[in-house]
Image (tube, rainbow, N blue to C red; front, side, top):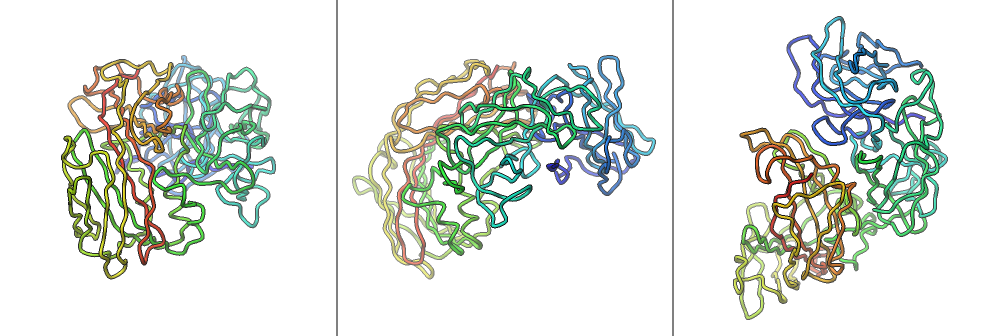
Amino acid sequence: MRWGFPIALVTLIAASATAQPVVSAVANAASNRLNSLPNSQLAQGSIAVAYGRNMGPANLVIASTLPWPTTLSGTSAQIEAGGQTINLPIYYTSATQVAFLVPSNTPAGGGNIRVTYNGQTSATFAIGTLQSNLGIFTVNSQGSGAAIVTYPDYSLVSRTRAANCGGPNTNCGAANPGQTLILWATGLGPVTGNESATPQPGDMTNVPLRLWIGGQSAEIVYRGRSGCCVGEDQIVFVVPDNVSGCSVPIVAQINNAISNYATMAIAPAGSTCTPYSPDVPASIDVSQLSAMASPIFGFIDFSRDEPDKVDSGEAGFIRVNGSGQLLADAVDSIPPGTCTVTSFYNAPGPPDSDPFDTLSLSILDAGASFAVSGPGGRNRILPKGPEGIHGARLGDTSAGNYLDPGVYSITGTGGRDIGSFTASITVPPPLVWTNPPDNVPVVRANGMTVNWTGGDPNGIVVIEGLGAFTPQGSNTIIAGAAFLCLARASAGTFFIPPTVLLTLPFQTVPPGSRGAFGTMNLNGVAAPTTFTAPGADFGVANYEYLNSRVFIRFQ
């Protein structure tokens, strides 16, 4: 059985008018973590991908037999390291991507790679190499989202169970604690034998692998090459107890080398996982949204932005132009008590990961304005904007200006699509970060404890941070990693594990300087409430407190 490599990944550079091959990036074929970030070195015996241009034929060509050839459709590649030139077995080739095996005898430490196509050879591209550095294969072939985790019959762990469940490439629903499953990856480490000609299975007990699922350590039954495929690893593990959700984070660790973060669906029993969202009240069963056809929902969002000193409100009614399953997937999040990490490249900041951007939505008419009243009779208006969403600045964050703790009422008289309604939001005491590490170095390998007071005891604390690179004299972020952790506000504390912080760039420059830098912020999300309105299937009211951002030097 062979799982897909990132054949469809969008190329990272524009086309060139010259015929000389150009290598612009090299990455583990599963994680797709590019060279500028930590844990991007290529492991001995792993499968990797070179991205660039003019490296092969216009149409993808895949090696059809074993052993993988060192020249495929005019493409060859070599690694120069430790005084050696090593020819690379090629799995597939195209103009913009070449996948290859990093031979197990490649010297660790670093070197260069060259790609030759039809007699033209690229300039060298610097790479790092080491013994073990795992990448987890994902369903989208990009190193993010759902991990490729299978049952013993090689059917996929998935959010939903398909009618044809059973056997390879079929969806068989969520996993359960205590089940023994297979995670597919590449980069466990070197093997002996003719590895490009035939798989080399065997339990690699010498590799100090740890597998974390929902923050819990999973029992590992086997770690080694698969019996089916060149360069592909299997990690056979037991699902730990006390983890559940449709997007439970999964990450592998070998010493201080951390894999990409992915997710898997886990249910306490049965094959149906329960989605979670900090923005959806517990009284709304998110999984029931999937049965709705074009659901209509109302939203009211109040927020206090402490850094910008702005109290604001936004509200509206929206129809999803499609299955309610799309909405259920969009609101799903990692469960409380867990963290995840996303890498990003060549962008002005972290990617906009709002899943609502992928939905087709229609904004409905609920009237010209909504009225807001707060403690002491302080009244405001949310007028309808040009796109049909109601919103306004309600005040600043000084005491007595507007969104102080208390109960606020929102009313609408109705419009063409939605009838009159009344909703309320309770603003809790402010969330106070009691140990912000502003201008204090944080040792990534030690993890980090975050403490707070206040907030809604029934709500969620959102802990966000990033580490990134910027060129000197520029505000453009060229690469980085952003993390997200969710914690119960009532806990008052959360430990960010080393597996999160070790994915961030190591920083030697002062906080706030150009080069590598890091930031963190702590936000409070109050427990959301529901409201009803004629013409809507449901309504949700939310309050968020945005705390100050601090600069951090991650070391």
